[in-house]
Image 1 (tube, rainbow, N blue to C red):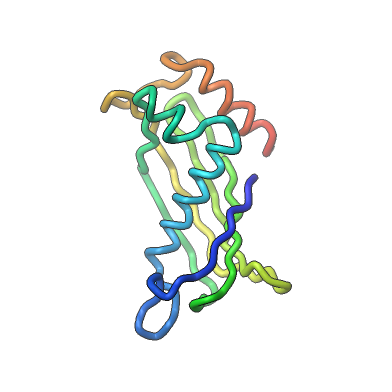
Image 2 (cartoon, rainbow, N blue to C red):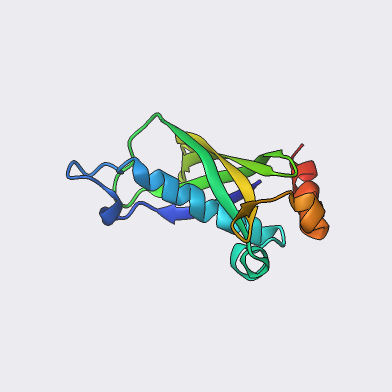
Length: 140
């Protein structure tokens, strides 16, 4: 688990000054990038340098409470599923204040792709798969 923090920006809101729902997926992406970095799987320096991408296969979100410009945000991200071909992350978006109110939650499922083709990371990059496995084991 990793907690990534941000603040709702005016540019992320609609005319009613409420976070536009699509921007929550940007937060999922940013928090996932930070999670990878924290687990010695830096997306840009390690994975992409080997030609590995984590392509989104499925993404979903549920929304419970509106957020407004200036609200502090904490995104709790965790690797909750792992196979040799896929990784699944879950996210909880909380107000980063005394209430810690959950405002939304979501999930993204990714396929490991190397040089443009679906790939079994355990066969082509066993060292990286071992890092994913270690991180997954820590959370379960």
